[in-house]
Image (cartoon, rainbow, N blue to C red; front, side, top):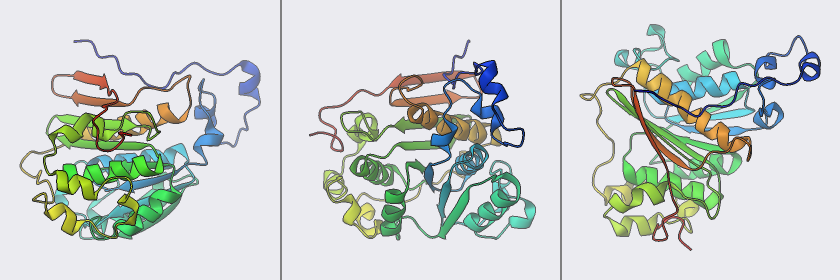
Length: 293
């Protein structure tokens, strides 16, 4: 089967623009990409929830792109089983907090100019800090396996703040990436997913009007039953996590760089085993509990 993936265009700038670049500019090769706005990119601040398989690739890519600042949040320590796909960690990092190891290795090997701030904590217990960082950020990446109701909470915060939202998850041979602009009048995570959430009382407590007033989520989400998704028996690999993380960042870039490159809010699934991709533009759902008027 033939795969067509919409990536940023590779047409170079004019010869005059090429000659104007500085020889000592580490970002010269991306500046000359047609439609690329490096000044805009260098002012971006990203909130990254979860430094796992996809999260590691997202963090590495953002630092290589040269964003201004990166906030990292995760509660876990590095396990030996993480090393096959979580590209920021080595054997020496086993038993270290993921956010600490990620920061150290990003600064040592990948960050060209990006400032990094971290918090080793459970996202459910420090929601007020997530709200603070989200207010200071220009993009929210969600890669935490706390389940659909946590995803709903993060998407609700994106809707409240009108900040872009990009999320990725991986399962065996498959990754799923969703990206939404966060802008009023556009579709959101809820338009594609909220219909499967049955605990309406929980959704009511997570609506955009109040989401930034909550200090912690654990008690609210317990009412929906369960917390983390257990994926140990499903499996994953660096192929899935690496390609999924890159696609999550690229989807956001297409929103960032304006109308010429802008893609609609999308839900994309890729199966690396069969090399098939399924993607659709998410339409606004007038009954969506997140973005309905």
